[in-house]
Length: 621
Image (cartoon, rainbow, N blue to C red; front, top):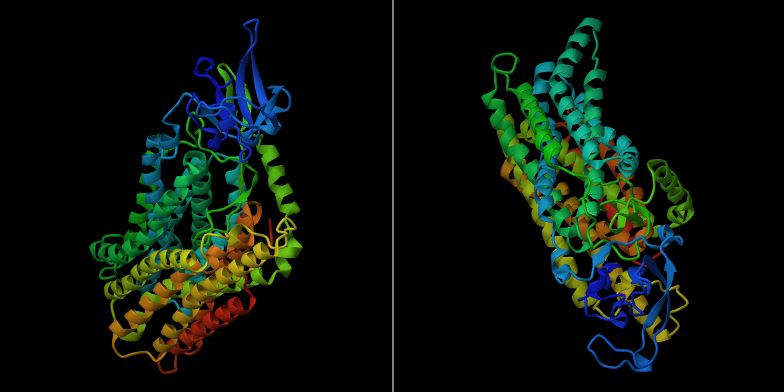
């Protein structure tokens, strides 16, 4: 009777969902042992909330889910009871499921309709983020021409955003864990939009100050660009929290892929749209006559961000009013991130707990903000730091990620400048020639993921899931199973090494060929497209390796550990390239040959490190 529709019972745990006619034997099978809540009607007609917290065998002769008799061999545990105030908050951290809702299996695994407009705004904000970031690589051409910037100064300006992002990403992850993601996103977009609008103002101030002191004064411009990068660091952590609050686990990857595609589309849009804005606003944005309207371009992009804030404030919500029934089973608090792109953030993954409500039970956040900070710190302190630092696999992932960022950050920041200086193209032409590499990157990422999944399914097979096997586990006591697990891990390691080799040695080959500085800019464009497209294969290399090396508890922290050094290395590479170009200005080719040869060498070094150091054996549970 605990599960009958007459009692309006509720049950905790997504896998407990079933029709109201199902019996306890089906709902509480030994595979699940989910903590459940039910309402028990006493003989006196009084109601008590009870928690099922312990299993015991069901007696022979009970009815099974199909109406037949359960034999003792089929018997599944039947729970004993405890009153709901007996430490229920510490034992029930699951979502609520109403057994009377027969549509629960399908409906609750879909993206909630009320989240669709929020999802659209999330996609749009990633597009705006990419627009604002890539805009400088195009605007730096007319800016440096107007203010007579050296290559070193151009490199410093271009890298300031990445330094700001790297410095802010960890603190913002903590902030998202304790504050409203809706409000934090609003503040972040507002600040980076104002920083974008302030970029031409600070550039003018820097130029005026330089004239007064007789030397270059860059700190106002560098500060506003770093502030923009710091504010843009809110995007991925807030996305992580919003998706966790709104989206069923089965749909999270789809929603995240849609949001991340906004970065890629924004990059392409920046290269296509920015030259048009530069032409349209030339002489109309407060700059000298005949100078491309780079000031107006920053004003337009900054205004777009401020306008985005209006629907976000009106539509966005931190979480649905009612807790989704499809939240994770066996939820454990840990530090997570999206494990995509350069997401080095760490967000506290919360588990809801049961609290008393007017209608019986409800789900609420587990702790206060102060407690969340303590939990965040406790998780960091309990992390296996020494094992991380001594793991060859972790070093392989870190070095490969750093090598990838050295190359990619350089190409994003310097490609329009390369086409302008090497081939004499104007700003519009240089930007258009930079579009193809970005498109190749999008295609490469999609191709790599599908190809890796196919190879793993055919080569490794489904009998042994190496991602879930720890060969040091003493429970794997049969030599045959142990050998199969080791073989599966070895095969998965080979697949990861194959794709990471493509992702680094492929670009190294393209960049080495590019260092010959071909006469035709189209040839250079194709080689740059090959470099960016092939580097996207790391999605099936170190990008997928984190979840093989670590279980759920430490996967997010491990990805952050291997990503943050990569962000810093990529930022440094942009500055180093500027200094090389200045020092080799009198060399034939202006130093570009050396720049691309250095990039190729770094890629080769990263590939060798991954090949020699990485294996897919799980080390951190």
